Length: 226
Length: 126
Image (cartoon, rainbow over all chains, first blue to last red; front, side, top):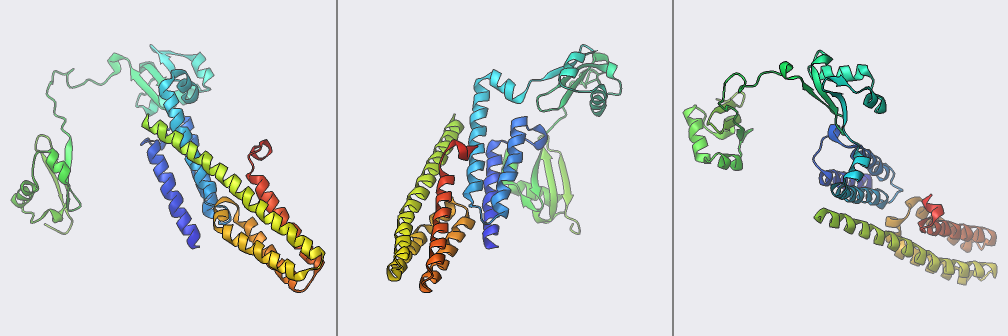
């Protein structure tokens, strides 16, 4: 029993570290080779986890081999566009200048219903509004409408001001986040003064406090505290 | 570039580990095989005291390598070898020649099987 427990911890740490080394991408953004490797990891790690007769090395060695191969292959991708194209695939232009590329749809075995569905998922009700539809190598469809179908931007309506400011979380669940406070050019004392002005005795009573670059404060006190 | 070197280092380490595993298993079992042959010879000649001494040396040599072998080979096969040694010990005590030979030969068979499976051959790879 204890062996299975320790083995599980070792394999969990190994697979987590391996996936971390591979990169930060989400499952939906994995390329085909990355997806295959991720699936294999779980299988390989599970074998010695559930079978106490198999040495742990039977799980560790394949996982490390896959990690090394993945790193070596991605280095090759950086060096050769042709290899990358072969392994990851290329993007497919399904609609070009409003014209559906039927040949390309046939090649990638995508039906018209699937294309229309994907376009609807991108919030375009009518396929005739789409100027470009590109199937990316990760399977995601990028859709670009004709100019007249695009929502106007603030500059289109003559508003040139930029009112987008990144909020920094300075208190999270009662804990002061020092590096975020420093990034705003403030100190913990200033934050505590601000809290006192708002009738809150300590940062421990705050669930969330965010301050953006313009100084706008968003404050959520902890429930049951004032 | 740094990551590529790490990957190459991992591949090299794994290759070295595999070579070590293969040669360690082969050496250990070849050594034990010689002791097994000597034990079988003693049993054939019904020299039970000598057979018992030979079996003791097999057992101590196997126990010496057991920890490392368990990292490299399937535990079930190693357990079978251990069980075989125990059965042989009782057969020697009872001076049962047939059972002794039977157990020793099956231990030798399992050892040969483990050794062969560790070899880097086309048959094993495929």
